[in-house]
Image 1 (cartoon, helix red, strand yellow):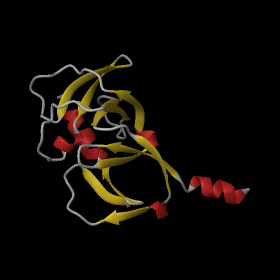
Image 2: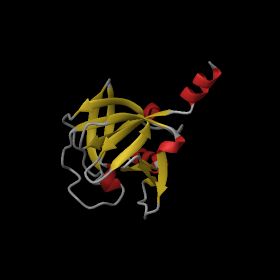
Image 3: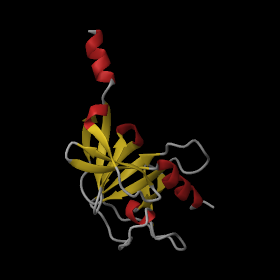
Image 4: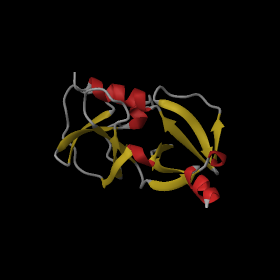
Length: 155
């Protein structure tokens, strides 16, 4: 029985979030909810990576285009397939949630340390590391960078 418990604890439930040219890999606990694409309220004087505000469970949640925040050129205002509402990882004042725009439907994956290998490549400012998950490449985002930028929207 102890071997079964130890094996279960060595797996991590994660979510793969498809973007235009990449995938984000996040622990499941970071994701509050996955929603179909909804209309967002546009804001003036915001950076191009902020698509606007989404009304969600009585909160106004900023919607982030990760690729634009990370420095990839493209049309940041283009809509996506769905929105991934994120629980904030940092404990500082500000909005408790933000949303990431996704190009495809996110999917759950169960990972162990053996399932991933670091990929050596140039990282963008909002990327922590790039990993190989089986045959797929995924980006683990730097949540501190994203959440710092989102917090600046309030100022």
